[in-house]
Image 1 (cartoon, rainbow, N blue to C red):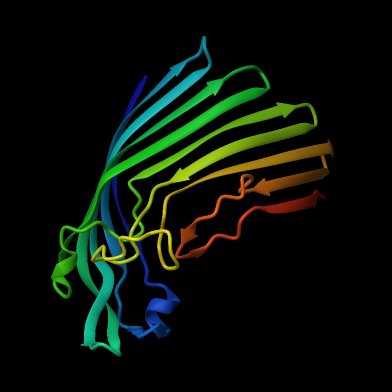
Image 2 (image 1 turned 135 degrees about the vertical axis):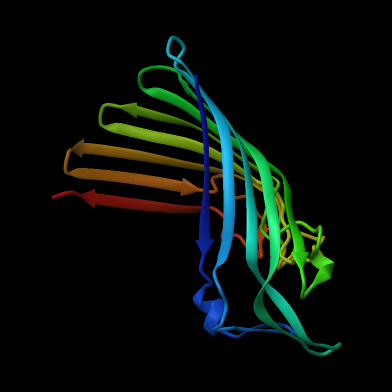
Length: 238
């Protein structure tokens, strides 16, 4: 087995919409701010990797923590029954903390199983001088549970995969006011099943067919999902 650890700093620059695009949703007007600074993070993780060569098993476990600074949030400028105006500002700090587990298993020489689960019990706003109501609340778009599992096959010129994914529900508002998730504007939990088949008759030619959301799951991620869809592709390599 291998014990590992790492630490580092990262940043996320404001988007062009944060900087220059004013947006309106119903009576809510959100103003852009060209003076925004990048959000920054101080992150660290420790983990253990274990490989069992005889059984073809690989297992990884990781504990992680991210400290967030200068998080971009909204400052209220006007709040009435007919108009709510706010502007994007750097004013919050937050923290995420959790565990990630992954398992890869060789079944045969041509068939493999893979899975990954992330549990993030802590993902909260620590401080927001412009909106104290968000302090202690869960960070927006931070689901507690993420899970992926799939099977992959490679047989001569053929390859294929079947993958299932689960994403837990999350909040769109920093105050966690959107407690009804299965409506327009909500972020509800969902399960998806995707599959892909690839045929490569030569080193220069590849044909593939994908079916996404195979079970036609209906759910909201702010807007309704598009449902089942298919993609056919031809790749020529020179």
